[in-house]
Amino acid sequence: MAKALEGVRILDMTHVQSGPTCTQLLAWFGADVIKVERPGVGDATRGQLQDIPNVDSLYFTMLNHNKRSVTLNTKHARGKEIFAKLIKHCDVMVENFAPGAIDRMGFPWEKIQEINPRMIYASVKGFGPGPFEDCKVYENVAQCTGGSASTTGELDGFPMVTGAQIGDSGTGINLALGVVTALFHREKSGLGQRVTCAMQDGVLNLCRVKLRDQQRLAHGPLKEYPQFPNGEFGQATPRAGNASGGGQPGWIVKCKGWETDPDAYIYVITQAVAFPELAKVIGREDWLVDPEWSTPEARLPKLDKVFEEIEKWTKTKTKFEVMDILNPLNVPCGPIISMMELSEDPSLRATGTIVEVDHPERGKYLTVGNPIKLSDSPSDVHRSPLLGEHTDEILAEIGLNDDEIAAAKDEKVV
Ligand code: CAO
Image 1 (cartoon, rainbow, N blue to C red):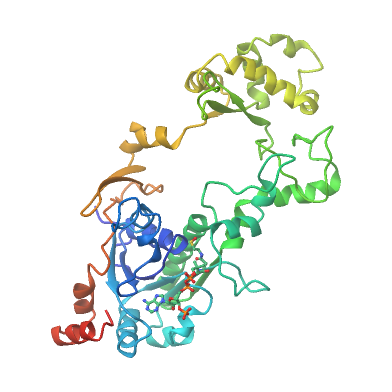
Image 2 (image 1 turned 135 degrees about the horizontal axis):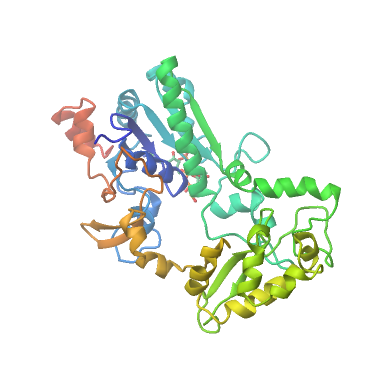
């Protein structure tokens, strides 16, 4: 079976997490991703958070599967000549350097278009045009400036960042969609175009429901928030602990073993249609005939009591027992599954969502595979490249002969 993006060549100028997430996705779908790295240095993450001395870190290996690596100093005169050949050779260029870095290398968009009018040029930056456009940005800066931190955390606590890399990986996914959309458009227009994704925009897009709530605040309290009816609402969407972001109340409750296991919890959603079954299973059938409890409206001001009662029952069962009992009753619930449990989950291994990869220097390690499954286009996970592993073969592919490759090496351009 052919891979979906076979034949598409990506000039990968990405580093750290956001850009590499994008190009890794494209590589999984079969694109030929040529990662350009600074000679002797490479992507900074190769050396960050190393668990084994002098071996590419898991940070790097888990974001750069299925790619080839070429080293190239794009600031050197000969390096610029080689870089121009790469631009000509490829369909898409992806970068997430600090604002202006590619221009400073001497390759503004106009020049890239001149070299290759079919080139799609995709960039991640921290911010779009505006007061912060020149700022360098990492994950948590994006979470803080995109509305996530302000709306995450305990009701009376400080703003909180989440463990999910919504700024970096989230924006990388947006960029990948931008790239394939531009490729699709190029089929008709014959021309490339620019694709830009700002991390602040990406985070805000994922916080859409919180902007919804900001506007609802003008029309009265947010009745599904734990602040209702006794707490105070300020002028902005508040933090809501673990309350559900949707129209169905939910909360995290303790399960058997919570005293010693930090993940012995489950999220339970008390959606109205399944509430009678839920009430019965926790032993509160009386709620169903009591007007104080029988309707969603009556329960809304006392959701804390509802979840207290649910918790009395869940504390007598393990989180997976609760899942087994509540799911057949159509009560949506989600055990808090730890990274340790996820890494051992056989069904995630079977679907390729968790993959074991072999690396020549570090041996076997686990990674997260492609979360997007296509029925007729396989996407296997292959190890990340060593720094400059494919330099010679890539330079030959773009037309350099042996003498030219040797000269580039002598000058330390590659
Ligand atoms: N040859 C020669 N020079 C190279 C090169 C190569 N192959 N690859 C990179 N460089 C140079 C760049 O041109 C840049 O030089 P100038 O400063 O002279 O223009 C320099 O290396 C460093 O690039 P940088 O400024 O992007 O790197 P940084 O470590 O200071 O900043 C980051 C990192 C991520 C904060 C910044 O790149 C950024 O804000 N990127 C956009 C937002 C983003 O993607 N953030 C997500 C990061 S994941 O958490």
